[in-house]
Image (cartoon, rainbow, N blue to C red; front, side, top):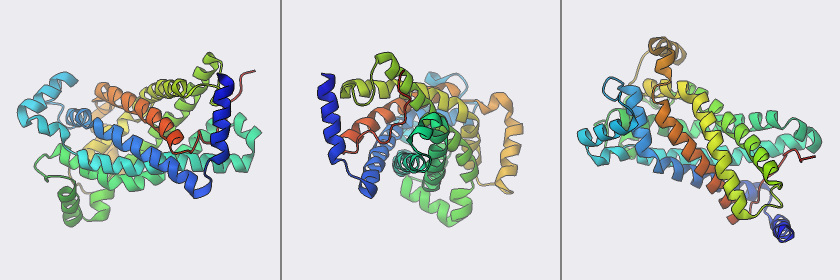
Length: 317
């Protein structure tokens, strides 16, 4: 069975695309996985954002807060921000996953395979950090629109009207990118933690199973990706929670003064405990979506003929 799987993998590798065609496949797989997962968890994100922005009202846990939102605003309120969420994370997923594969391969080519294996954690960190920073440039305007729609339900009727109102009333820089600092501080540590923990968890799980990407069946690989993604999601949620809270606060309404000064003021006002408001539902949301992202991404890579990308796991001795 292992020989058959290895032969199939080798055949796929032999016909796998290269260059732009290869990274376009990685990008499309990442875009679909991120757009779908973030979009499907919009109700959880709505409740989490309400708990962060209005803790006086939504302070009795996630399930009670769900019921409060439905009772006060109707079931449709749980879908608030679905448009910008899907579009924003579709674009972000393309740059993040496609960029990660590109920068990882670029760095490996520079340092060599042997050095890459020994320094793989640093490579995971640098590649994911660069990819996420670029992805945030695309995500930020849509994330600002999403948070405004969730925090102010009467602000606009949807993605297009909300996006245009912010652009007209506040301009591109102030309206869409006032939250760029916090979104970078949130997303870059989040993504670095996500990819590093995912890669290490994948390596550990495969060692326990006694196989690797070439010998394990596709069904087993999907299970590995889902399991490692869940672990990575929990770690990433904790690391990025303070910045996520600040991002929700700073995008709730326009403000004056430098962004970093406003962030520092908000952090002092909230305190340590306040920065972790909404962590419970966010652990559920991020853990679930990260697991699904890596599961879907891994399967779509194979469907699109892109393969596993460059693997620098340390082989078991």
